[in-house]
Length: 255
Image (cartoon, rainbow, N blue to C red; front, top):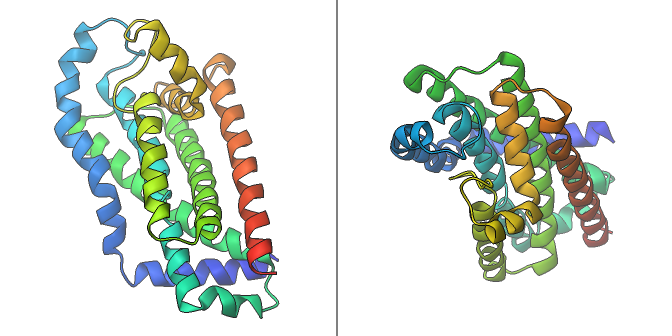
């Protein structure tokens, strides 16, 4: 199966490298948030109680890495819809390749692109804004971002194959992703010191808020169980469910 995964991964990677501009287009939004929104928060973070520990860059940069993995891979289903319309998915049905490998090859390529974008963003934060974070924490944050990218890409492919509609797919994604963004604390942390109780309670239901907190803990070098356990468990559960959904959908559609 892994040979099939490699073949699909290499095919999609070659297609991506033929048009590398997309990597930079996808990272533009997080970069703009970092450059234009981050400096506005410097004095706010320093003078307002209720923010997580650390300076603005150790709070904001890991959240933007989650944003890259969350939004950069949520729309990859568009490519699969194009393959479906052009008959590529139909042709893959007659190959002996494992249906699981078809999904894994695509998902791993999407995760690699998200990691490249995350590394570029961290480099910018270190060079321009003087971000200081432990190497181990950055490595852990990249691992979390990779798993999150695998989760969102798997779910995106499964959703695209389920809907099979270029009109319904983006409409549903936008309806889901906007409240997820606002309730995850990516732009502003949702803590008991900053948010009203009802808003804080709702944010706890959003699983991605726990992933953002785990990322921030890694950037400030807090490797305690309390800081990382909940976010890690939630992410592993999400990744498992998304992969199962994606594999089941691929097997059904390519049977």
